[in-house]
Amino acid sequence: MPFLNLPLILETRRNHALEHATLHILAEKYPGHRFAGHSNPTGFFILGDAPTEDVRRAVSQALTRLRAGERELAVHPGCGTNFLTVVFLSTTLAWSPLSGARNLRSRLWRLPLAILMGVIGFLLGQALGPALQARVTTEADLGNLRVLDIQPIRRGRFVAHRVVTGT
Image (cartoon, rainbow, N blue to C red; front, side, top):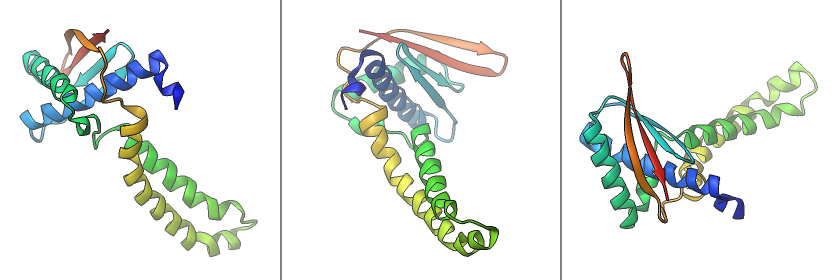
């Protein structure tokens, strides 16, 4: 898909891969701790309480490991792509048998099929979400991406880090 290589999209996909790899590494260091991320063309945010130096090390290690070919680090189980894929397929497939029903009785007769289709959508979405991450929403080949700065953000109990990237 050529549009995936348009500059702003490609930069976001590369940052998304680096964000996921960073989250994997932070999860290894802080098991049970909750982190989240958000990517854009100029970098990404890591949300969660960790010392800035640990975030720096995690980003550096993520960059090194992705460049060494650990492409699986670009896919994360907590990614919104997974959730969106499951919700979209489940609701679309569950709704499809009901959409042609003309009255309540007809809808009730189709309800078991709608539930079955929703479950099928759920199962398909769980398999398709990571595949979409790997092929569409992330790019594990970071090209000449480099980290320019890492800035801590603290607002009361809220802690995040802004990772600024460029070429």
